[in-house]
Image 1: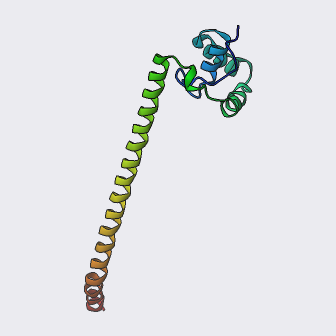
Image 2 (image 1 turned 180 degrees about the vertical axis):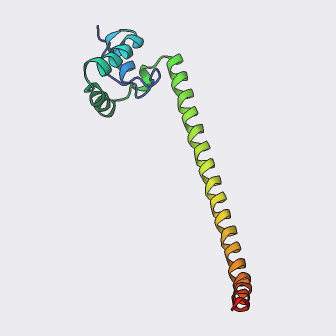
Image 3 (image 1 turned 180 degrees about the horizontal axis):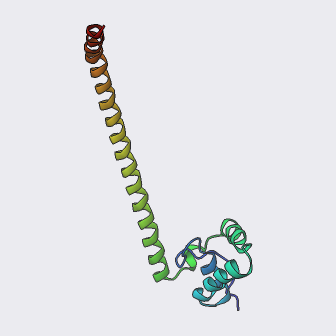
Length: 130
């Protein structure tokens, strides 16, 4: 019993929304579709992985007008969490770059200090050993 065209269901998605979309399209609970996909993948054939990826790339996302208010809220919360996570990753990478450049500067200063002061002392010690 189909409810219309097939769409990826991002509000109930665990990965790309393929299984949730199939569940919505067929009227079967998404848990059973996911269990069936896992069963097919591990016990029948690994061909389900490329098929899953192809469907995820080729299928259209479910239009926002087709979501209920609860589903829309869940989708918006998920999108907000992803946006915040990307912001945290960007902040961490900027801080890491800053720390690395600071370490690089400090190492260069240490090398400059030891190369200018140690060489003369080292040369004097070598001369005294001769």
